[in-house]
Image 1 (cartoon, rainbow, N blue to C red):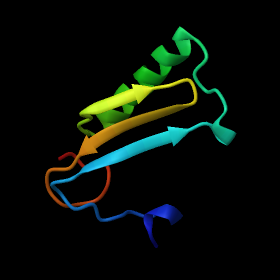
Image 2: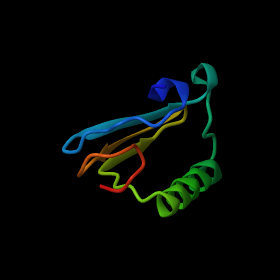
Image 3: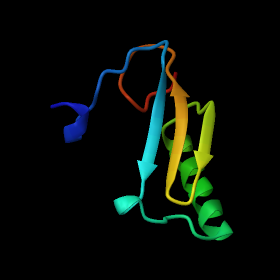
Image 4: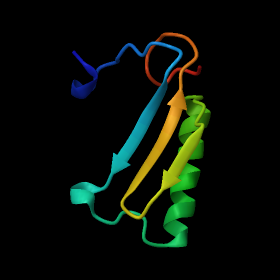
Length: 80
């Protein structure tokens, strides 16, 4: 099973990975300041549960994008 099917993927270390999440049909998902604040809190909660370093990120009305480097090999979501 590959990552597209929901299984774990091997992610070699030493690279930065692009992270992107879009709304359905590229619709608006973050409309208000409160939406942005709530999304930031959710990202913080997720990073506490699954430590991950984010070196760059951007929240837009229709999507979130970021860059996450990996230190060693392993599976996605493990700390670098």
